[in-house]
Every structure is written in C-alpha cells, then in structure tokens.
Amino acid sequence: MMEEVEVVCRIFSLTMYSASGETQAVQQTADISKKRNRLVAAQKRTGELERLICKIYEDNALCKLPDAQYEALDAQYAKEQDARNAEIKELEKAVTGYEQSRKSAEKFIALIDKYKNFNTLINTMLSF
Image (cartoon, rainbow, N blue to C red; front, side, top):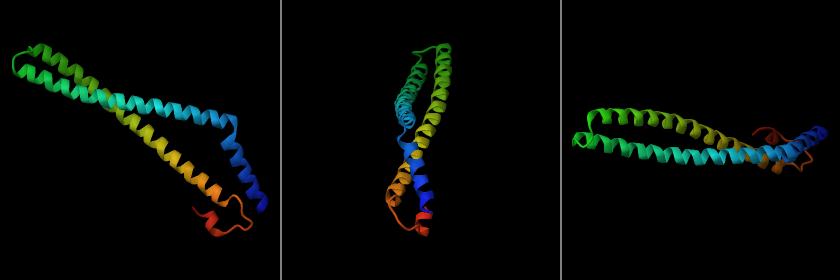
C-alpha cells in the first residue's frame, strides 16, 4: 500500500511542478485577469448605457430630441445593453468557475500536504 501512495504523490508532484503545468497555470491566471478586467469594463459600460438611455428619454420627453433620433438611439443602446448583459453573464460564469476550481485545488493541495508523510493509511485519509 505504501508503494501506491508514493506513486500517487510522485504523479501529483510531477503534475503540479512540471514546466508545462507552471506555464498553463500562468496562462490561466493571465487569462482570468483579462476576463476580470473585461468584466469591470462591461459593468461600467452597462451603467453608462443606463444613464444615456435615461438622458435621451428625458431629452425626447422635453422635445429636445426628435422622435426619430430618440428611436434610433434607443434601439442602438438597447442592442448594446443586451450584448453587454450577455457578456457580463459569460464573464461572471468564467471567473466564478475559475475561483471555484482554484479553491478546490487549494483544498486538494492542503490534503496532500497534511497526509504526505504518513506510515499508516486510515479511513479518514481516504474520505474528503
């Protein structure tokens, strides 16, 4: 049984600390950082769109903006708003998924660290 544990620990060690594993982790971190930045920008633009929609509505109601221009701008802003909302939903899903995966990996690493040096295998070690 000790040999299997050593093999598992060795495989884990090679996987976690190999050059390709490091490159992949760095790439994932950079990718998620870009997605977070994009999420912030999309959320900011959504707020701007809300203000613009309110402004053109008020301008139209006060006869400062002709109906034809209002309708064109309203349609344009609504289309962009729908696109931003879809993008925000997708980015939030990606960021949340990454964070959950990272937390799971951290828990797994903590378990490996906790049980990596042992002489006897017990049931508690097998259930997590």
